[in-house]
Image (cartoon, rainbow, N blue to C red):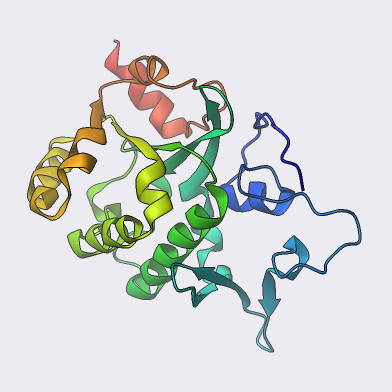
Length: 233
């Protein structure tokens, strides 16, 4: 199917919403009524006898299947969103909003984070077809919402093993970095490659971010916008 260049809508949609709609560079636009392909959007989620919604991702080389509990992730899906495109072609802007992460006092926190990890990696693998940048919005992500070092390291290691995801990542922009985030970056530096280090960039404000990528379709949470406004006062 020939790809069409689509403009990301100015709506509050998570990557999961966009993926269901087919609005992303890696998503195929299925003809109406055609569900013959394994990746048909209507066949993605399965509801078990207890009413839990599951999604299967098949990623990596050789492909490995992982099951994700989408029901338990429902309150946290806005952590990933599609911020439109930059440059020529369909170069994705993927936004990670830390304010939507679960608090580490959550009773089933580890279980949620395990499934969030699978969702993030699986969704990126499906959505990203060409070059992309990651925008990490720090504001609003209190210390009790920050992922542990082991979780961050696992995300990096897994993405680094996916040749396409590693090669096509052109920038990793950390917006409103706190001293804690900067300290964390220093701690994990021995685990990351020099190439990735060169792609990592701290960005002080939203106007500064707009000089790096177009931001008209980037979904900015209210708490992030307020934080940025207070910086200029």
